[in-house]
Length: 431
Image 1: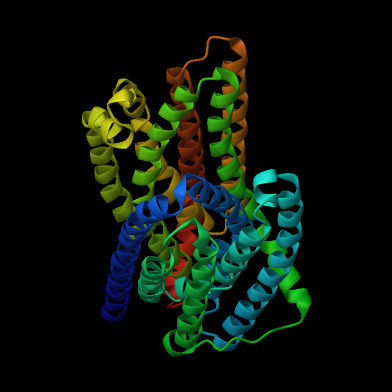
Image 2 (image 1 turned 180 degrees about the horizontal axis):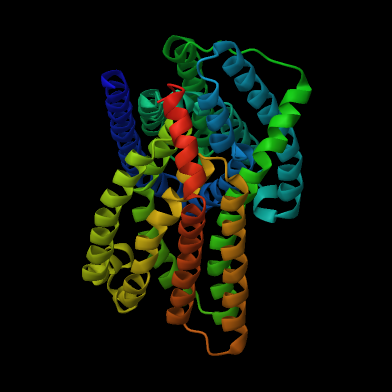
């Protein structure tokens, strides 16, 4: 019994260590761009910075495609096989093969996209270099470190590589004529990250990569497809709301107010990411429901506090983000506060709980169902002629409530199965 308690205590400490590491990473992701972006906005001129921003938005889409859900599917497989280093090495090799296949396929798609969109077509070299950078980033085996619950390297790697990139940006980029140096620096930081990661892989996890036949890579693509559909659907459905407001309301000011409100929501949701990542890594490896319950209880307090603070300081937040001219839209931030509260539970009851216990389809179905409802509701409101930003905010809250309640409901129905799997995992000594 004492041994099991020690194992449980060790697992909890590991979770907390990873959580702190992930919050360190999140802090670095806030600070480094905050130093870089204003500098680039000044030295690149409006046109140059506009090109960078537009290409960056396209690369964000390509990054989602290249990630393809491996962070969930491969992390789970590594966690389930982490005692077998040889098998873990084969899984890692197969996933990397799958990523190379994706890089080639997505590259073809990007070529078509570049030819079709004038701004990308006029800056083909910038697009190509940027794609090399995100392709290199996609080859980082972060899923291995998550599967072994050793996520500290993710933070140190980001700080080192992006810190060097920050110094190079200040040293080399001085005007719009240096525009191509921006993606070239990104390529350089990606190479640094790859070197640091692969040197640390064997030392930290004990995994030596082995490459199986190409069929194994194709199989990894098939297994990760459900995760990709869920993640990509969520991205598309969220983007649709902003697009719909621009189409139906035809007022740039409305789009600006909505975008600023969503910026507040997404910024706070980013605070949930370290919890999500650390909890998912812990749950796929240990399936300890007790820790999950503790996280939910703590999250209830945290999410409630954040939601209340957003309502109280909504006008101040809008003034900071947009200035005095946007202060009248602070009501939108207040109306979106329920999304902040609900989304915490939508996230933790998704992949960290249902996904960790193998209910992958249920996570995907809930994402798609709530997304489809959102599209229909927003379209109906827009076509009715009576739509307002407040109405859109209500729809956003209702669809988030559907996502949250459906996942919590499925967890309640499947609670017996999860308790049995958790007990089996404990008795097998995997915790």
